[in-house]
Length: 448
Ligand SMILES: NC(=O)c1ccc[n+]([C@@H]2O[C@H](COP(=O)([O-])OP(=O)(O)OC[C@H]3O[C@@H](n4cnc5c(N)ncnc54)[C@H](O)[C@@H]3O)[C@@H](O)[C@H]2O)c1
Image: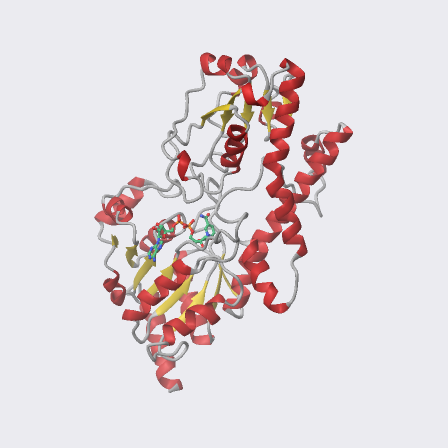
């Protein structure tokens, strides 16, 4: 039996090294599309799978829908026959490697929702064959690959580490980062057993520059959660410092700029109107949920969540105060122009953006709200904020600025005319220090 396993693993490693293997990527979103392109670029014949037919359709036309991948490059890979996408999951049988990149959101009760992962694994199980390598990339709690994925795959009788190989490798995409991309970000990998580990290293070693092997999928899962908890906690910390320092008349931004000149032992994190994106507001709660099984509270995570979730209300309170002080206007009768809707600078991704919360709070109080975002011409459909779908960005002009009682800068995209805001807006609530950073601070700018 051991011989057979080694033979299977060695045959797979050889196929991977010779680029004779076919790579399958399931879930062609922010993580899956760049990975599929990287696998094709590395020389693998690559098949992408998605339940949403619009994604394979666009991919097969060489049309990218994710900032991190250029249409020109995608088109070239499709033209060369190296990359193709489909909704036909029966074709998973053709793949030597199948990488799962589907969403791992939270339920309404803020508990892990593994339904997408489970559905995908059951689909893979239908065509699972000896010698295949199945990889989970979706962010999840430590133990998921072993406790959830493995039994579902083994249900048909094949065994992990014997007949097929199983691994976990966390995704580390940083949307909008011009310095690091899929190929240059070191990738942590782990196999369920030594043979799977070798297969993981062979596959990812071909796709990315640096592979960081760890001893088990549990460790690799914990690495990703640790990275995201680290960010969530540090962002909460600066958000709390922002509120304390504000009362003291101290500018937290100036403090961070000076503190980061320390060449060791300090890493800058920046305050904001709340947490956004697919990862930081969600992933830490995967660990919180799992840790209950071990009777261990995750107090840092809970506290960070509490502080970060309270930020939009803090920003609105600052806005209300400033409006009242400057013009005696109440929030309920005010017109507010929000600048920046996506959750992060220079990207179009609106998932979990705290700006939605700001809009809800403002409109809940009766304020009239418009938004300007050069990256979001219209709000796409989202699970949590379906009512906002289709609402359009207004142009940033003398007229829209003059019509607003206050401008609320929520995301500091580079492609915004801050000079115009500084000269035309009656009042600016700046959650990103966007104006002062550009030398445009004045007494009508309130940092929040
Ligand atoms: N976006 C990031 O920057 C980022 C970074 C690190 C980790 N992650 C993690 O990666 C995973 C994927 O995130 P994403 O941002 O790429 O999500 P996404 O929503 O952009 O993409 C997921 C894709 O999966 C498809 N899908 C859903 N169910 C499917 C199924 N059963 N079979 C096939 N396809 C299916 C969806 O149609 C969608 O195209 C999540 O676990 C996330 O936490 C994301």
